[in-house]
Length: 170
Image (cartoon, rainbow, N blue to C red):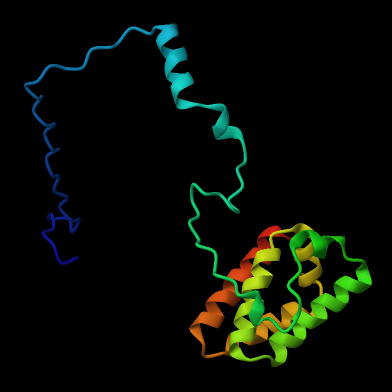
């Protein structure tokens, strides 16, 4: 070894004195508070509430979500904008035809028509039946392809529509 050695060749081991414990503080040590069951029950009652055990929806929750609805202009749509109740009342065949009109507008309409269609679709996408239907058609593929657009307004609307669809789908 490189350090000091004893005459027999064994290294010298030096010990370091143990650190002294810190000096006691001058303040008084805390005293134990006696246990009172009524205080314990009240603290538990204040800390735990039944609302803490209930699952709350984050969708359309005004306490956490302040999204101003986009202003719709149905006169800009190249198809008749049906109310949600009318869409839900459509037969399967009529619903497919209606969604085809939406698809055709998004695929080949003007930028204004596309944006107005997205605003309209966002308005009806908060129903399970509509969300499930749109997510199981080629319309969702078209919405995803539309992200290639350079229009930030269209991208924002796409995100809002797809978010609504995903939130409400089963």
